[in-house]
Amino acid sequence: MNQVIVTPNYDMILLCLEQHQSVIWLDPRGPNLTWEEMVVLVFRAAREWEDLLQSATGPACIRALRTKNESLSVERAKHLVRQRMKRIAARERKASQPRPLGSLFDSASS
Image (cartoon, rainbow, N blue to C red; front, side):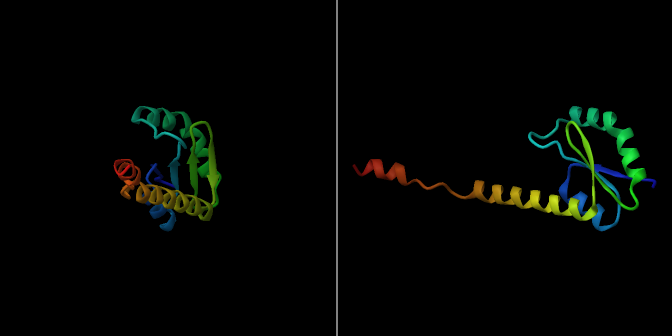
């Protein structure tokens, strides 16, 4: 194993998994990590990631959370990433919808 992608990007994670490439998924849950926090996470967890990847029998996805790391099967990782992408898309659609102005007009007619 020569290279492993380390990313929080969902599209990149799916691409790696579909190409049978191991990937480290930076998934802090909650607020996004700052660049500084991301660097600390990478340096703190690199040895554990290496051990998890070496124990894998094929391409692996290591999900790096703020306080722990877990090895996921390719199918489980794809499922979780797709779920997260759907939730984000739904939230973005909802946020882009115009808000009704009913209460503004109701008070003006009284």
